[in-house]
Amino acid sequence: MSIIFASAEDAEHAFYEAIAHADLEALMNVWADDEEIVCIHPTGQRLRGVAAIRESWRTIFANNPQLTVRITHSIRWSSMLITVHNVVETLYLGNEPTPHGPMLATNVFQRGASGWRLLSHHASTATEAAQEATANERHDGKPRTLH
Image (cartoon, rainbow, N blue to C red; front, side, top):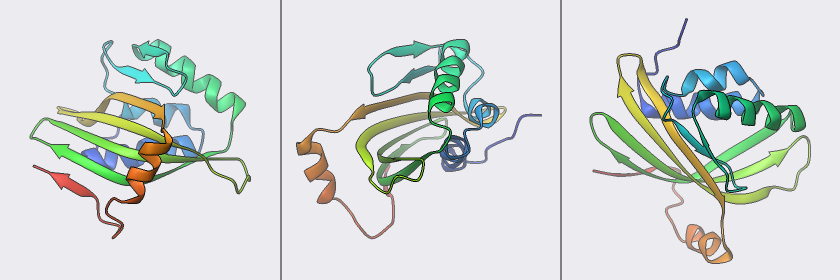
């Protein structure tokens, strides 16, 4: 049975928890049940549809069974049915103490009958200028919400 996410934040938390546990089923449960969903990994390839996205994450988990993503500098745009989160992702592989990234990611969520679901995840490598800009953003631990 599918979990109903009461908020986009709940869905986003479940997405990153599934990554941390290399749990493909939990990860795919966050995505909308729609063939138009899109995932763009930092390699730049656009994956469209459930099957392509599932296979890409299966491969990622097979090659990196312990992947932790720390999220910072969240900027959020919200409406009744769509929410967009732009975050900075810092990746940790296995027990390596050295982070990889940062990556800039945009997560788009849609609210429907089955709660909030992920429509699009787009991650890309941050440039040095972007890394410096994020250093000047809000650091009080509270996400910035724009209405």
